[in-house]
Length: 585
Image (tube, rainbow, N blue to C red; front, top):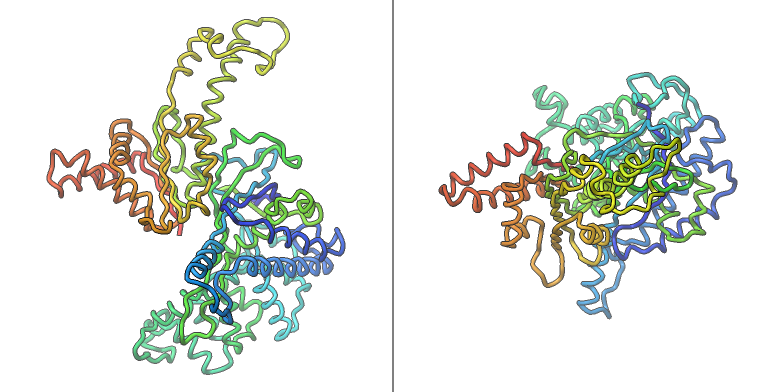
């Protein structure tokens, strides 16, 4: 299935206190820098002519400027020449706290869907996004190809099936070198050992070639009895060297090319031979297709996703002058820039979209396991720290729409069908009839209306109550409506308080632990765990297993046997689809 070029219809910061000032400044910069509407018609249009390639390069420069503006507005550390004199400990502590919060920005984004139903979704599904390389990486490689091979970004090439993705039609048409470098090779992911060895073959400097082969030694040297000419290092294993130099510093192929300049003679086909395609980025849908029917900018169908803007500093290393550098997510920082017209909370600035429509290529990624039970009476335990709560907003919205449908529309439809036999139709909304008045008109609908929807307990965790408590207002509204029965919130970085995680609440709150076991073992609730990090999923599962061992099996068995029974109980829940995890790293 070909991806759909979706338009961003709306966006907002979910993190509290993340100001709109920078987004407003970015919009003003874009407006002032834009010379003609035609040149900036679409951010993601494929370049088909020299003029369009030049316009795309100009958009890259605007993106780079926008990212630099966000970096300055959200510093992650004090400037190196910062003088601490004149500030007290409390001021310094608050400043450090603000740096941490600056690196934690969460955005909810609304994306348009086609009106021909070629892209449908259900709660629990994910959507894949195709993004280009970071502008600075694209510009470096294009300049390198021009300097060493005289290749211009506007030159046309044809990619064969082995060097392009199957999700685009680029094989059937020539594309510019600029588009190929921007969209068809992964320049920004941490480089793998095998690719370092392949790159070393293009190094013209013997010392650089030797260093690159040292970094990739366990890929080739071990297989050939050190046939690559790499000698053993003293005091540090090759694996440690690769981890500290490449993995911890998140060095990409562009970083390696900068630091090993004799490799810059690599030709374009050599880059394609070494580098994979840009991987899609997947985000959980946080909306329901049954809700949100309003038309936005002419689009009747849309969905929402939430994501954290990846923004951090790499570790500091005394022997690495390029360590402790700021790294940003290729996709999320790009999306933050595209969302700027909406993040600024200024209707006037939002007119920027009329000049530079923010579009992104998307495609659906259905799930088979992370699905709501079809029976509304099934209780749910939803555990989603951080952005792991996103798909559960879709679950809750879907459940609300289902309950609302049962309580109103069906009653009106039955009343209409049971009382009118004329040759004309009535819209159910035109019937001024209450549920009590419609009761008894149809036994089947009476039965459906009497079915209770299962209770839903929601567990959420974040660092700071006043910053990244995502969807606080929305969850409270679900509680008021009776969709959510209990909500438990854990905060792990509150000043002067014990670190609390969702599993901590389960184990330390006696009432919470007892209710959780009761819902799982007596009410036969389904458990869903979603979030970032394998450790979270493991720790939550261990907490639930421990509670089951203590409160269900502990009375009849010793501790070891009770634990074994609890582990088997959770395994059986997994096999029957009652214990589902969606964990990403």
